[in-house]
Image 1 (cartoon, one colour):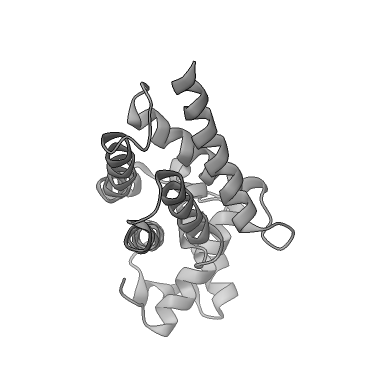
Image 2: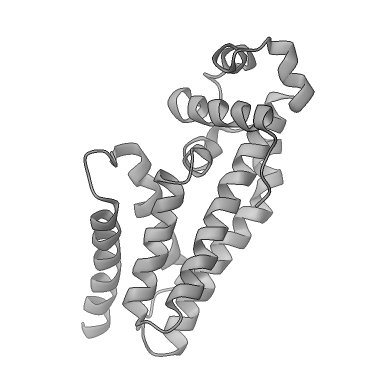
Length: 197
């Protein structure tokens, strides 16, 4: 993951926070510039438009998730299927809550972003989703996971649980490990019940 220069980084940090708090349509370049402490026109030195800034934030958010996924994959290849899913869930949640505002901004603002921004980021996003589908496929192939439902459905259920947590979970009042365990247990035990039915 490439690191942005300090001025650009500060703009992205502030903008991501505003996109989370106020949404895409509720955030202006002037608001971003005011919080960064520069003139609105100075933002154009770093980003040609609000859409370019939003795209950079979304891309960074996905890069954070991909890095977290890869690290979890490397660290857990020898563990049980349940432990592997749990580690990947924890990594995704860390990307949302611990590794800067970019992933949370991507998750909360994607649907309201302009079509050109969404269209440009979809291939990158699809790549991340494919990583999860491949993990689940590997677990099914090894017999660690038994399910007759499509893997894409299970991935969407996991993503729904993980991503919705940005709307209600407060890491200062709750434990991210407990949240990861709850999501993993719900996912895994739900599949186990389906398999034994």
